[in-house]
Length: 176
Image (cartoon, rainbow, N blue to C red; front, side, top):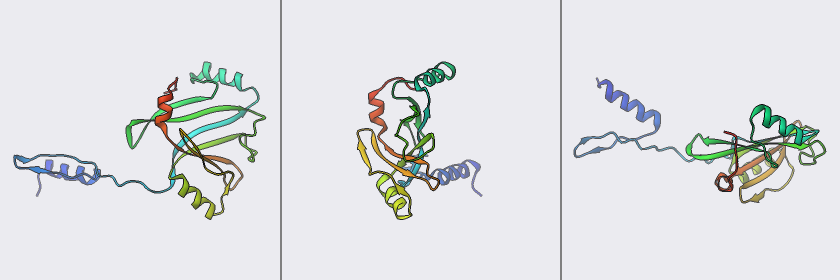
């Protein structure tokens, strides 16, 4: 029977996808992370929450004063760490638009969710093949790629393959 410390090390290796190396000086525990690269075109998180308001300036002030959200003229960036790479800063954008905006057309809903995605081209191809209504073509900006689609109930969704490092370089106040 293996000793508890060896068994614990083996369990850690198996659970974390790691390897143990031995040197000539005796066994040394060196954990090396060996995660496979995720190539599945999919949603990886929420990138933004957008909704309509009758008086966006007043509403922005209320959210800022009452809830402590750092709101600028372009909305409020929320800063968080990437779960797969904690050194990487990611962002979620929250913004109020005037109730007369056409930004969320053709949806009649007073909101739009932005989803962070990976492999946007492959995701859009798959959605189109499965009958999803694609509103526009993929637009490429310095901070990422965007496209808009409709879900089966007519809600508009914004898909964003972000380049967060550009937003970090721009700087500015965020809500953490």
